[in-house]
Image 1: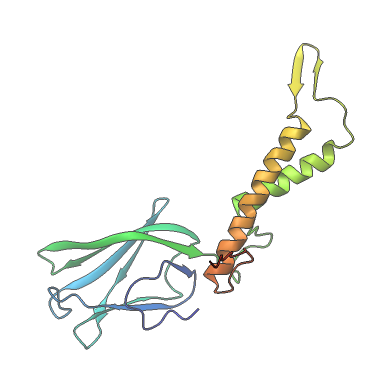
Image 2 (image 1 turned 120 degrees about the vertical axis):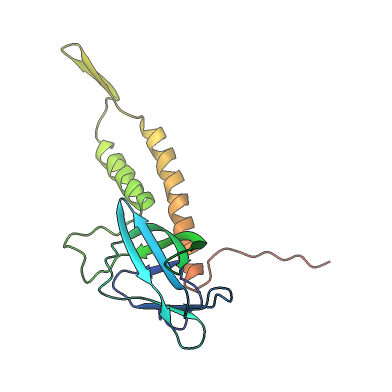
Length: 184
């Protein structure tokens, strides 16, 4: 996805990509005010400082040198003239993994998909076991009954189907749901 000629920070971007956006702040012209974005996540902080775009707007650029790791960042933007400071807005942005710099063995599955895979592995492994609980030397161990595991697996299958549907819609591919129409 191209992240140029934007008029606002995108909701998500991939770490390492160049993102450029302009902001026109009528009351805070770039010749007198500096626009800054502060991004924070897990104690880390990244600051992006705007420059004068030459058309009375602030140009902000995130580039490869920016220290963004994947994850959800909270951000706040503000202007300053070195004497006064005014908060403009705040929000969240999702920084996606840069697969080029990801370490080997990176697991890109969502929490839902990981849980679904684990439930299916447990169900497959339990097919040959007869005992749901047992005791040895005064200590006992209980396992979730197979019908409960299947119920949870079915829930997570539905959650995973919703994830896939949302991803397809986000990418403009539509979805496989039915649309019913009734004519009178």
